[in-house]
Length: 318
Image (cartoon, rainbow, N blue to C red):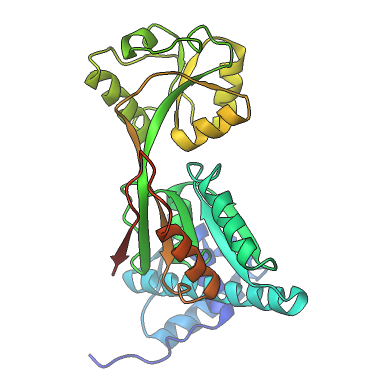
């Protein structure tokens, strides 16, 4: 079959595709874009005629994208993300003479890695502007794939990463057990895992990697895994619960040490054979040629390996 022409997306068509994908309802998509429903329907029909394929199927359960529609939606999101990047860079350059870095961070990188990287880049370029976004891995990877972020820092996890990216693997992040300052166990010189199972806990949510690794560590130590009526994935709520009584909690090392320096927790003297996962950086290859992104990659690759860190490894994702 010959290639079809007319696949160039105008901005209003790209916005309509994204809105339809998000809302899965023509009326709601039109309302979101401040269009009438007939106008949105006409614009979609024009786009389908231009492309030469049906992009959405209309039914009783809403508007569902076809295979061709999913391809066009992906390109629409990518194009809109790139356009937003250009507009933000132009504003920064024209109004303030600055360059721009869009940095995503998971909570595991927020207390230490992200601030250290930003400080290094600001020392090189004091007029640099940084847009820092914290979120979950899936959310940040989606933004990276849509060209809405340049770099994402944090635990890499097992999620399939965007195709057009590079990965810098930094180190494995240990899990530490924490309690409130002044907790009866905080003054101990050394602790065994079996002693901790007898105390109340604020545990990670079930079926999360953090919970699985914690349970595995107690089994490895020959101890019963802790049980609790409280499970939390909120750091602030966990800290507040620890401050109320003698509960224990498990945190990634970077977060635990940061909270310890702030005086909100005591790290207990227990060596668990448990790692939260690999900490690293995922770089958007579309913006990897920018000087600020190159400087970030050089700094990340040059990080010294600590006692619990492996040397950084640059990995290509084709």
